[in-house]
Image 1 (cartoon, rainbow, N blue to C red):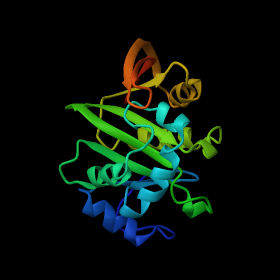
Image 2 (image 1 turned 45 degrees about the horizontal axis):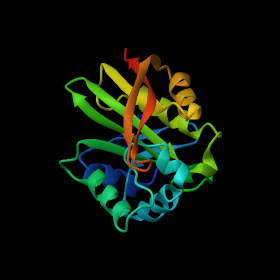
Image 3 (image 1 turned 30 degrees about the horizontal axis):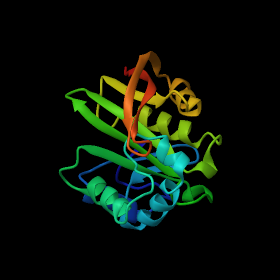
Image 4 (image 1 turned 180 degrees about the vertical axis):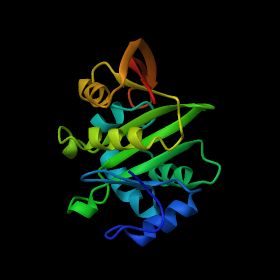
Length: 195
């Protein structure tokens, strides 16, 4: 569900203020998680999780090793008014989990199409958190997209399962550049038509 004022009991007021500070990016609540805009205090955990080669190599854009200042730059870009990508922290603190489990994002491709991306820290793989976060974001559809695109590296079947479990349909094979791998990597591409 997408949350807006007035706040429900248990939702942190500072999250709402931050949502307003980053251009009205909504806070989305799922059964165990709150998807909220990134904040400066997320930098340390983002740097910690993405220092894991397996996490970095599961993405197109995260370098390995992570250069100094990269996590700070990522959070600053995510909070910028003129950003091209909306990034949500996967926050489990409302249910006695850690404050940052990973991130999920939407990048506008054209007027009514967006690309979905996500990663979670390796300690949270195979917990259902990634699927729950992706399903929550799809359900909320904060960009009002008609179509969502996503991809998964072919050596990462877990991410492919997250997408298919969230209603994405396989489109075909492709390749994408991975900064961490310094190579083109075969991918599976997916599409989700929105109602």
